[in-house]
Every structure is written in C-alpha cells, then in structure tokens.
Image 1 (cartoon, helix red, strand yellow):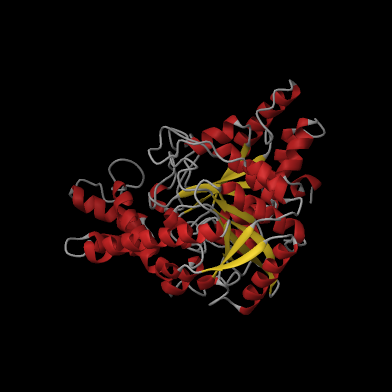
Image 2 (spheres, rainbow, N blue to C red):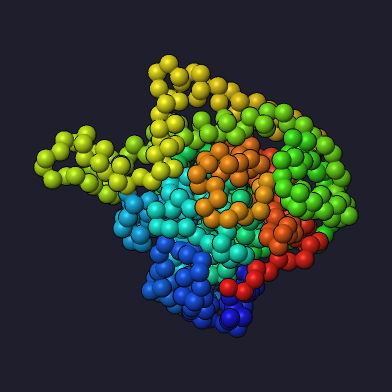
Length: 491
C-alpha cells in the first residue's frame, strides 16, 4: 500500500505545496488503490481516472508557479452521486437516471474545482438518498471496510467507505436524517452535517428540500473542517442559503486538537443518554464523556422531551417532500423513458417509467408522502409533524441556554450484517434515531470516532446551535486527540 494514501488531506496539502510530491503521484496512488480494493468495497459508481489525472496535472502547474488555489489544492476527493457534476455521470443511485451526464455543476462541485481538489469519482449511495445502509442502491450495495459482511451506513455509505478504505482522503456526503454522520460512525470516520443553509443545495438532486445538507467526510476532524471551509458559504442561487460567512471551523478544530476544553459545557441529552443503544455503544459513549471531562469540559444534563417524536415526524416530513421532488422524474424531461412506443398514453409512459426506474424504498416513501399530503390527511399528518418540528426546535433552543454543545451516541448500534434489516423498514429507520433531531432543527452536528464495540467502530455525535459549527469541531478535535486512532483491518 502506498504511503501517500494513508496521509491526511492536510498533510497531503502541505507536501504538495512544498513540492515534496506531485498531484499526479497522489492521484495515481489513490486511483490504483481504488482499482485494487473496489471489488471488495464497491464505494464508487463511477471512477473518473482521466478527469482526475487532468485535474492533477492542472494542480501541479499551479503549484509549480506558487499559485496554489488553497490548502487542499491537488488533494483527491470522492463526491456522492447525488451532487451534479458536469459531463460526469450522476445517477443518485437510481436506474431512472442511469447514464445521465448533467450539463452543469452543482455549487459544491464548482467550489471543489476552484479550490483545486481532484475528483476521483462518484460514490455509491442509497437511491435518492433514501436509506440507512446503502443496500437500496440500484447498482448494488457498498461493503464496510471493517467487515465486508456488514453495511457501511447510509445513505452515503459509499463516501464513508471510500474514506475508510483509503480510496480517497476526503469525500462529500449529504445529510437529510443522518446520512453523513451515521455512515461515519459505523466506518470509524469523521462526518459533519453543517448548519442547514450553510452549504449550498444548488445542483443537489433533492430528496427533502427542508432537510438536505451537503457536508464533509474525512478521516480526521481537521480534514473535515478544511473541506467544510471550501464548500461552505452563501450561494445566491440557493434561496435557502444563509447570507453569512462560515465560522472559522479550521481554527476551531486546531484549537480543539490542543486538548483543552476548559469552560466548555457539554449537554448530555437525557433522552439519548445511551438508552436503547447496544451495551458496547453505551459503554463507548460513557468513556468518551469521561475523556472530555478530563480535558476540562463541564457536564450538564439537559432534557429534550420532544426528541422522542423526531423519528415519526421525520418519516412524515421527508417522504412528503420527496413525493413532491421526485414528481419531476416522469419519463418526459430527462432520464429513463419506458413504453414510449406509440401505443401508450403519456400517463402510461409515466407510470411504466417510474415502475421500472424507482426501487422499492423510493416507491414506499413516495406512497407514504403522497398519502400524508392528500386531501383530508394533510392537517392530521404533515401538519402535525411540522408542529412537532417546532417543539424540537424549542427543545434545542432551551438546551443550548444550559450547554454549549449537546452530545449523544451517533447510532444505537454498530454496523449490522448486510440483508439483516431490509425486510423490516422500521428497524432500518432506527439507525437514524439519534441523528434526525438535528436535521429537523437545522443545526450542525458531527460524528467522531469514539472507540470500538465488538471490534467495530462507534461514533460520538456532537450537536451545536445554528451557525455555531465551530463549536462542534473544537469538541470533536479534542476527543480525537484524547483517544487512540482507529485503523480498519487490511482489505
């Protein structure tokens, strides 16, 4: 295994800037790693070797002139296949978009290119980001590098697995109900959901517009912060984008790495204090809190009683919004078209296309969402769920008066075996039990490795107030500095 693939993104950036290594060498090392392990991991849906090497050569030209585009110029990255990339296949893990090459870049993609990052490919995901295990990808599941008989989390399991398997030091994910943090937890990586509106949704194939949030995946907290700084900030093309600068998350991560949390108040969420978690996960959670206390943090218990309603509220709000967003896939505008042989009406072509193009989980959520929005049920279901969302926001607001950040396990359990929950949607949905409240609130949250249970990674989740993303990075980096790093078994 090349030494280059084990370096952090920050260290790669430093070596590239110092001309100790070339961007082409770095890209080639990672592309060779992808070729070597993809048969076991399946983290990518499309590997863009030619495009990556072209971008690496351009990075080398800039670096040779001393004109680096930023601290990550020349560093490889994988991009979740729900982010549009001009001229590169973007499928959202669905057959209905198989082979589609967008004519434009998402804002996230544009910012990555401007910062000089080298996109090595598009990562696998649950179809349209609907799932918690990456088993609902129309192109086959991704496998957890820690144990390839187990799931890598979802919906962004491809991004997390690529980082954990050393196929890329960085990746982009999206988080609607935990789809960055939950995969990070079960693969022993770092995954951050920024404040909603803190990263642009322009060019993101929408699942649930009031929840979807692009964010960074990495192996270290500093790397996640560096990537967050690249992709964050106001975008006038996104009407939900916050017109404020991103907090200095990189400085916060570096401050936290000094291991001093004096004066920081950690709020232990009473409702999520390991209750319902596997014993090993609960034990790792308690040990992480003890480690943070030794660094000077103060612990206070906070109660957020409405959090227990977050899961059912989410599974009304998100499917309702998805049933609206996915109406655009009709077999007319772009993507798959089935039955257009002159013998079927427009409605029949639409029905045949959706039947052939959408997978079972997407169909389930469209039906659920359409029902919740239908006449006579809107107020009883969707309207009530939005009221619960308001109560959850109030709970967060009250909790942050007593604490600077809130902490909880990221997931109730470690990575479960492939196929063990696909027949029981409710058990699958429980994977997001602890992550969903932050999405309904809109605040930032991060998952950082917190040890092992049964030889598999456990994550600690740190939640912060809206536009206080720097707080979570400081605490996450402090925990990272206090615990031994996790190294997946060799593939």
